[in-house]
Image 1 (cartoon, rainbow, N blue to C red):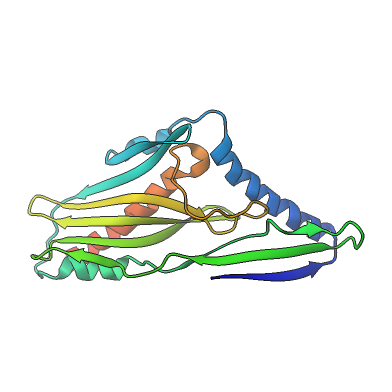
Image 2 (image 1 turned 30 degrees about the horizontal axis):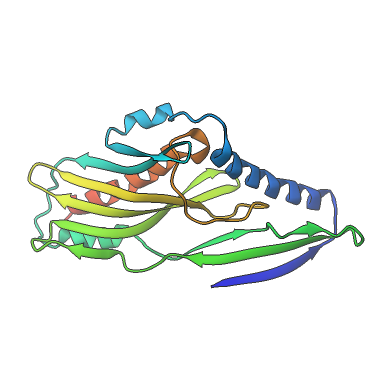
Length: 219
C-alpha cells in the first residue's frame, strides 16, 4: 500500500538545509552501491561465522552464525517461546522525497513524500518435533548515522543442542528507512564494504541472538 502527500514549504535558509540534508542521505546510499572499489571491512573479521556471496562488482554478507554455549533451559518449549519473544516480523515503512522539487516560478519547495509499507507476517515458520530447532523470519534495525536508519530482515534457524546453541541468520537483506532525494528501492543485499555498514548489521543480529540465549538461560 502506498500513499502520497504534498507539503508546500516557503524557501528559507532552514528550508534550503532540509533540501540539502535529504540530498546528502541520497548521495550516501548511492555511493555505497555505485562506488568504484570495494573492500571487505576489517571489522567483519571478528565474525568468524560470517559467509559471503558475489554481489554486483563486489560481495555481500549472505549469512552469519553465532555459536554460543549450551543453554541451561529445562523446559522443552523454551526455544520457540524465546524466539517468539525476541524476534519481530512487523511491516516497516520506507520513504523518499525523490519527486520533490523547487518551483522555478513560485520559488517554493514542494515536498512530495512517498511512503509505503514492506514485509510483515508470522515470526515462527517451523518448529522441530523436540522443540529444539526453530525456523523464524524477522526484522531488526540499526542507526547508521544521525539521519540514516536501516532495517535488516533475515531467516533465523536456532538450534539448541547438548554441545551448544546455534543461531544462523540467512537470506540477509537491508533497507534504508528514508533515502531522501533518491528513490527508495526497498530491501537489497548487505554489501561487505564500508558504505553498506555490514558491521552494524552484524552487531544488531548478535543482539537478537544474545537476547534469545539469555531468555533460554532463564527458563
